[in-house]
Image (cartoon, rainbow, N blue to C red; front, side, top):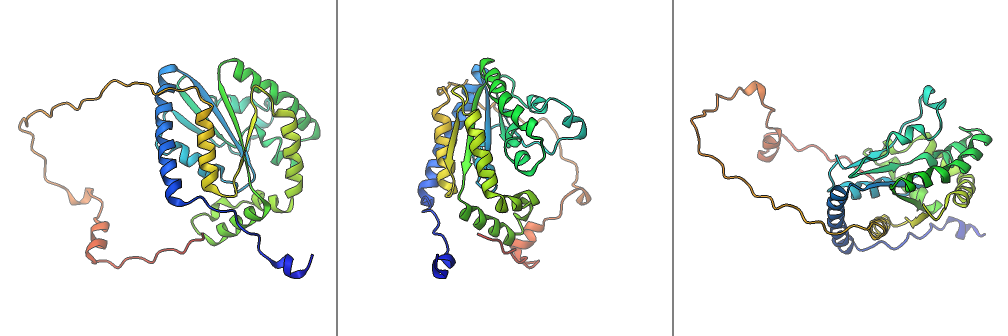
Length: 289
């Protein structure tokens, strides 16, 4: 490869036009609200597993999915590193506690598949533990489906060039630097190790009862739209009718008088001071792309 070719920056994937993206996202989010009412009325249970490369857009897809949904209906499970006690439990035990009850959805932002990915690559589990996981995961998932849980598994795929570009963008962005961890940086130097681990995982866990659905995520807008559209297409929901809501007539005043305001109990009107120019507007922090 010539130096000229090697120095050439990889071309980014064509982005979905913003206007089209926002219009379709709004439509799909409205359908999610309809699906939520069906879920409540039918008492269904849904589990969605989000896996994929670091910086592949899993978190932003979850954010768009939950934006207009009831947080009492949809819970996001992003479990921390297991405690010393949890390390002695059956591997799937702490994930079982996060499974939904009737009328609820659990979104796993990373899941039991940590064992097939980061734990396998970084040596956080033994070869025997990894082998046992690949054997037990399909059994565990068949039990969930057999019990009536709707299980969906998504793998967000991103190219090495796009992943590196997103990491560099986070480095420049003070609002998103927290998203970079030592494990994220390891994913750059261990790209092929993660690829082999993912391929082995798919061979053992892509089962008819709970197949993997892979999403190309170099363009986050397209990835979000493709995810939401596919997810909704796999859920047997209908537009459930709700009892009409009528606001009651406010009764006439019955003599209540509000006590004098105590200025010590009120938050200072900083926004009003900004609007009037009484205080100078602060500089906006520079962020990455």
